[in-house]
Length: 457
Image 1 (cartoon, helix red, strand yellow):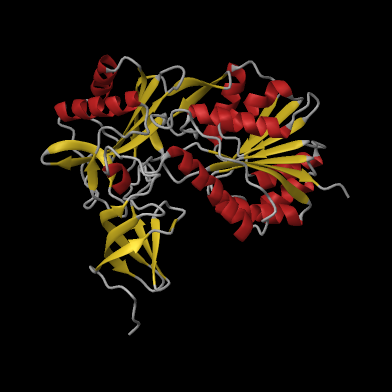
Image 2 (tube, one colour):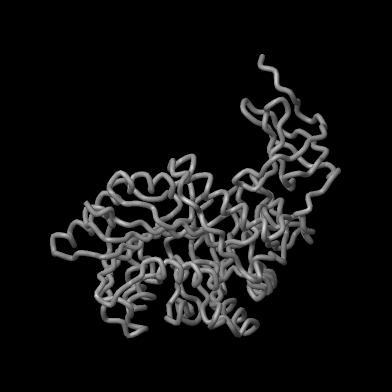
């Protein structure tokens, strides 16, 4: 039987030497790594060993013997326990350095590009109360409806009313909606037995418009007094212009189901981004930090150095936020997206802003782009903003086959971005600029905008 230098439930004193990419403190005992929540580099801590594995273990801080000079007070430690704000105990300047270093690490280790300098992370002046969307589970605790968040790696709901990183108006609205549901004797969902009715409350609020949408995610389609409840929500929360029922009958961790029904008002809210208006529906992908999204897109536009004669492709176009933000700077924008509702939204948003030089199609980018190439559409710049899994090799090939002068890659996952940059390099594109942007303060997530240029042969 393999021997480890620590055993479960043992208490040890340790010095934290680093932070993991998930924001956990790392200590080593005889070379054996132990990951410890709520511990920062340079701290000396007394730790209880919770789990011992083949390659590493996990521990819990019992006492901080010597705190880090970069530690800041956390008003509610549930924000750490649930993973809502796992870096909230670290001074904000150090959070930005941590994110810059995360991107530098993957460029060096994964992309094998140690010569590329990652620029300092662009942060927020007020790095809290920024989220314009909340997805909150509803459960029953002590006979009452409760809202909060799950303890990390568990299905145990921790009741929370101040989420710190969310728009405070959304936090207040969650409590109001929950209390209305309680008055109507709505039953909470029971995950273990897949019974009950109300699964989640999802709220979106326009950063500039202050229009609010409430999505009630239910286990069954039949919603007794649903329209009456929706009217009461609007009466008590006048900012609410849309109440939508979303039906999710599956036993799953996925929050939204396919079926939707508008119970009150319109099926969307309207907001602005870089001076353009957007309709945002319940399922629309829309960045959750409006102020920093403007910083991110402004940086992407600046790096692209667009000209009035440019033809631009906006891959993974969503509801058109990037493409429509640049349409008045270029000759034409072509966008594609696999979700047909998003393409409908993008077309509607083009009309909303009186933009007539943007074309949106439903389809996979790697299929649509070769078709456009046959039609002699030759982009000067391609913008790409993929999901966390990054880009498919066939997309990278199709993009490079179109020979744009520049590719602007917006990434929400440094590891897959680094992998993709190596493939672009093999096909003749150099990585010129790497700029992290902090869209998710107090968390370990980082967005990065990268400029690549084609090597002339």
